[in-house]
Amino acid sequence: MKKIIFAFFMLFTTSITFAQKATDNFAGNWKTSEGVIIEITKSGAAFTGKPTGKSIEVLKNLTFQNGKWVGVLNNPQKNTTVPCEAYLEGNKIKFLAKKGMMSKEVVWTKAN
Image 1 (cartoon, helix red, strand yellow):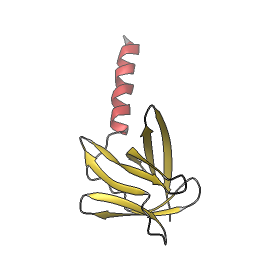
Image 2 (cartoon, rainbow, N blue to C red):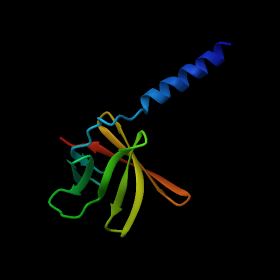
Image 3 (tube, one colour):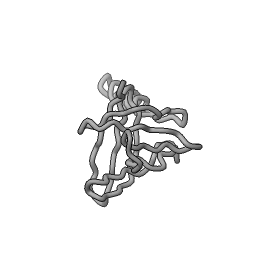
Image 4 (cartoon, rainbow, N blue to C red):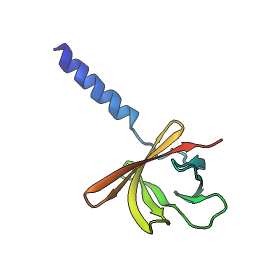
């Protein structure tokens, strides 16, 4: 019985940890794993991100829909665009990019 209660407690705790809110604020400067600084700004209800000093968007139309943050990640070096979900976790943004059956997690860290 204790194991069942513990399992439900862990499930509940995990769901709270990954809960997303429409009030999440992604605006600011974020560093990619490659060291590139991305400036995310908000326009209306959507967030967009561009590398500092560049005009190309690498994060497009990040909006809160059906209880989660969804948008599009663009990799100009590989000329690929993929839909993604975004999760704000403290000083990190975790993107889950999906293309067909494949998915990849991309993490950006808040830059000072």
